[in-house]
Length: 186
Image (tube, rainbow, N blue to C red):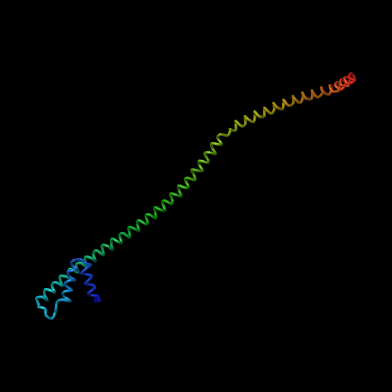
């Protein structure tokens, strides 16, 4: 297989990979380079070949200009897409920050709500406790009951002391009766 030089490689690329207009121009170039003998060419043929080459070159210029414009358009679109991507990324970042702030605010509000619920539970528990008037009334009742109990205790102490004094006077009498009973039985 013969090694292709740069021009042949370019022509082959034009023949097989490019648009039909470029392919036709490549075929004309191949014909000129390999088929046409320039020493024996007739001037009318030479004129026709030059016109064909000029037409091919104009077509190539048109294609190159079209590609350049499409490249600029592609480049502008690419730059626009990059700027849009950057703008979207900055929006995403700002939304992330907003979401983080909302999460923190939610956590704070949740904590406040939890504290409020705890406070309300404590308030309910405190409200279930008796009021100062009720406590004072209960204390007065207890004082009254204590006084009443003290009076009863004093009464019972008096009764006990009376029973004790009576039992002291009865005790010698009982001993005497027992001694008499022992004498009678003996």
